Length: 443
View 1 (cartoon, rainbow, N blue to C red):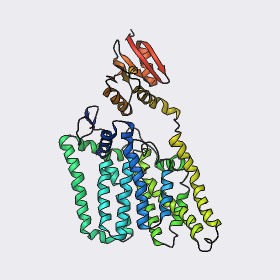
View 2: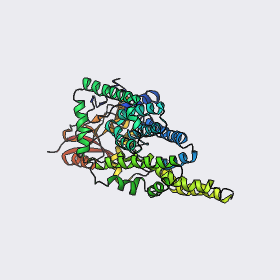
View 3: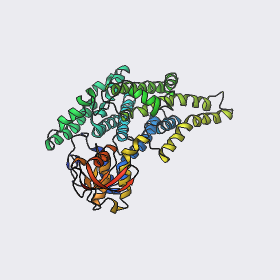
View 4: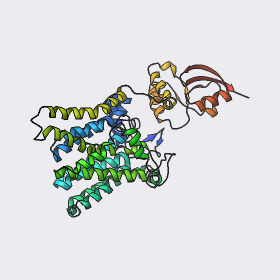
């Protein structure tokens, strides 16, 4: 898109991308960042980081409007940004769709909640705008909170919404905007709608795609054992305290957050295709439930009339908050500033590291070809940068190498094939990276 200026159809290796069929809102943002900052890792990842920052600001804005309470918003944000699965790859730290999607999902869900409470047309407008942007970010996944919103509307007996003309105007705006994009895409990229159906609708939900399978409790176990293990034990405590508040606003928000979380979890758990980053939209709502419990104790220690005159209790309230968040926070700092690479990731990432390093030593890659088995978009990013600098480097099938080829390989199976079937000169070896000159095919 940065090179061909086709803002409607994303391309992959010179052809319309029919594998990644998501609308291109995230790609638009990355292209804009590339025009401003240059084609770089920063440009790819900045939209995700900005989305995370805006989500934190929006949560504070929402809490201020609905509860008029700074501390509850702060606690919610602390829980969110110390959630291992939220500050993670494929979320806030990489150039993927899910951080941006999470922002728009939270905005439209909480805007709808505010509209039910206050009947402010501005909230309804925010709901539909964010809903449109969520779908333009990640297609069908942007709609997965709607069933819970419908159920909550019925449970809370907010039947006025079905008679509100502005709601139907918003639906018309949504259908027109999303329909226009998909029809234009199909017009200029025939077969796109069929690819969407196979990849995103019936195909991904009803069938296992690319062997990404798992049991029904896949996401529960992921939260429990990995991505939310420092906080998840507080979810039931937060729910019980939340529904016990005298203030009905806290009780309603607790029930609402629990319904949203449960509904979304059931939907993604029922899908045949399971990927760990599908759980990302859960974190803000689980954070609010947990914040109910922490805030309940914090507020009692800080404000309770019988205790607030005693200096010790305000101090204890802050110590309580710090003690709960200390371990998750320090783990997050270590994760961000002292990242650890698992042994099973070394082979996958080593070639990317090598090519990134080669940007400063161009003679190391000039006129080489890369032999790589599998999806290689993470490598293509650096390869494109090298070719922009005149390196003339590309991919080549290791089965059809020719005399004189200069080859870079990092995967065990590829290196084994080259060494078994070709006469070669090993030019260099660095960790998992080997550079070969092909002399001839073995007889």
